[in-house]
Length: 629
Image (cartoon, rainbow, N blue to C red; front, side):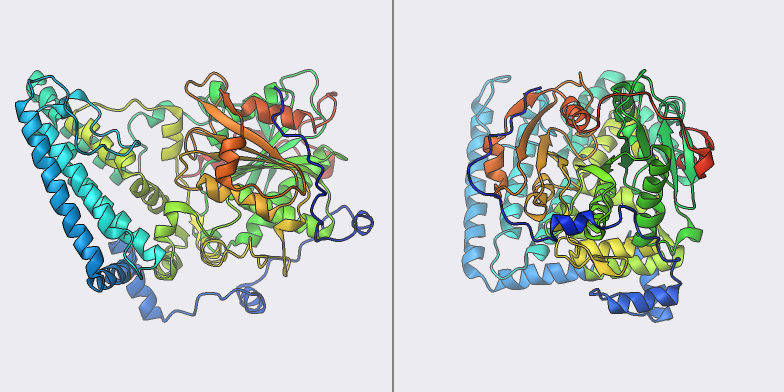
């Protein structure tokens, strides 16, 4: 593949704010031995010495009350909603001009709807009419032709006009904070979506047609589906069809060995499938919010298998699904017991070779923290850094920020103090709300009203195999990264000293996805002004997961790619969109070629594990942690 990187300009690169290269070369290439795990008291003392304010000690009675409130409200703070509503309503009350605009908009919409009703009534059946409002591009609820027939055309147009009015009412009110505006707009949209005409039998033409054609059999099937889903939910069983994708047989089936196990991770080394391999290995750091096999689904769409078949030695971390016993694990533990423990093992198994580290989502954020700490300490064991949909600046984290403010985090902490972890259901529920039309209402209509089970696939089965998160780690993650943005602002401590992303001089391959609700691509793109190293940035079609699971041959996939040379000037994201060439197909081959060019000439593959170094073959992949529920 040709490299679309523009030729370097004659402009001198920026001066890096870092130590002289000679001084860096003189530092030891090994990581200092980490200090013993801190006790809770020591952690409290440590946090007071750092530029981070830990949550205040909570009165036991308050903790119980707040935890009960969190359980009752699915961890949504009613106080946060009240504050946002009061901010919006109070400033709207003091904005007569805005209220006049909204009144005029309502009158104009009424006139448009009346004209549309008259045109529709006078038009012969089957003849398209000019609609008075178009749904957003991503809204597929009213695409079917039946929605454009009387009286359903009037119903859905009236709904879209109401949605348009509330969007105008909740946006652009002078004096309302941006966060409160987003919360009110999101809440209004969720309430409106509940009453969409597509969600009810009498007002959905597709459901009515199916009911008449089948004599109501669809409703009977839907009732059976609802009862079955309720039973599965109460018993903790996976969704219907997920049991067809067995971990280790149908998914997570790439052959390999577990070569390291500690209280937090298993490290899997995959069996080579080529006679020769690139000498420099790849370490994959998935997010612990998900099971690692998102990158090792079925054989045809496994990114890990793809890399192995291309001649790479691949290692992957499989995180333990934490329970009460792991409640005190924190971000430092995930760094030391996770990334650095895996890196030490790889150095023993493949000695003397640089490691190409790859982090996905939260695993990418952890990798960026580790790479900054290694650059600070002169640890030169990494050859490159790849980030998949990973944020390093959290000032604009997308719609997840709706659930992250002091009130929300405090309520969540109270609940986690009692349980010891964030439950899988809480996390899944938050993501479901963010995409309620796709993940909630469309499913309810399809399975319970239409009586049609959506076919299960490997990605959906993986998505149902959720994980928990330790209370202490999750509190630190929310406060240090989301609330305080410590990482991008140079306050995040590793080993008691802050790290700076500007110290990273590794070549970077960064992937963002166009419709990501978790890590919006413009937020991921901010890496360009945080890290002065060479960055090859890819923007691919798809969302947070489907855009990454984008194997060659996958239909309707495309991406844009452009390389920013080290030290070059910053290009705003909108300018990047205009400059970056577009390519059809999967971005995997582009990444693999980038890795291969930096991984050395192929040679004989290394052995699996290194028993003499303390890393024996423990068991076959995928190991035992991935099976924990």
